[in-house]
Length: 240
Image 1: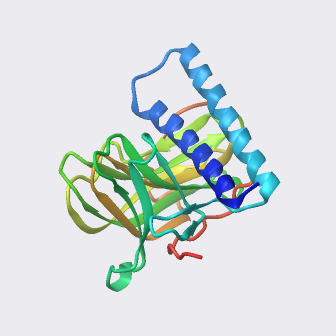
Image 2: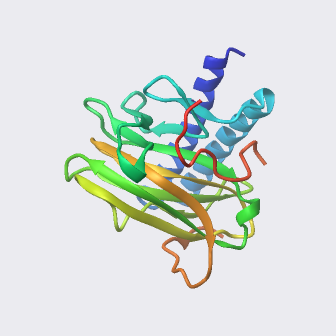
């Protein structure tokens, strides 16, 4: 399979998975029938994505706005072509280089810079996703770190996207975090930076770490092996 075609398929499938699950968690409550249908569609996407990784043995990656491979990260967006991700090396000081997700003209919906890892190393533990974030955009924009834990059937076990503490408008570099307990039945963890609406969000000094019970959780449990890496990849936003 041509490498660029494979990359496009992988990005598309990952995007579909993220869009389905984020939409599931940020809209109204669904009936049991609707929930079962969504979970079935999500599982199909997950299986197809895993199949591609097994066939190519490739680490997920995405071509950044600068045309260079951003290893480990993918772009998911509600409306294809409205958002882009990349590396900002013009940032000075401790926050360089920085990753970013930005809107294109007439963007609506959301775009997210994301990756997924296997949950084995984190099962039964409390984890904290932290990063410094700097934003530029209107007050109507909404930005947040997010983390999602999925079970073996693709079901969402836990989700936190800073819904009650979103970053809005233009802000300076500020550290943010989400803290989650990873259930024993977890299969993989997805996380990233979400931009809803127009603007740009930069991210730096990102970390996913195990913390003690003295650190308060920000996420609540929601619901009672693909070729993902065992641990986070490229948190310092280097390019190949």
